[in-house]
Length: 120
Image (cartoon, rainbow, N blue to C red; front, side, top):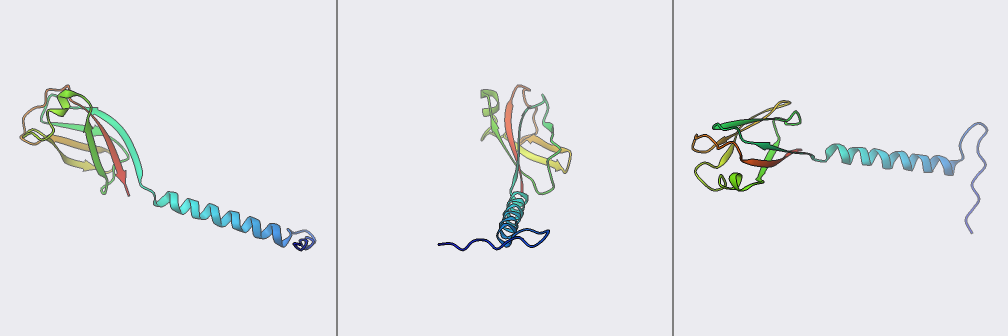
């Protein structure tokens, strides 16, 4: 049979309640650390300009961001694996990124992509 908790000291918490509160605080601290270390994922989409490059405004971009995009329509898919395929031309922390066509020719302007920004 478990022992009864000791009576609370005058004006304080019982040792059992105090231990429980300390365990909760430790668990919350561990959760906060895990969330801080997690990768931030930002999702969005962009349509290419009828130009050789397109700037995508995204304030979550950092110097260490990994940016991935996926074509969302047939026009965008034609840029995959061709000499005109897209590459990450530049990224500016807090501002966004620029994608450009591999061969420097203009996109049609109807190519739609989704993107994910991973920060870690």
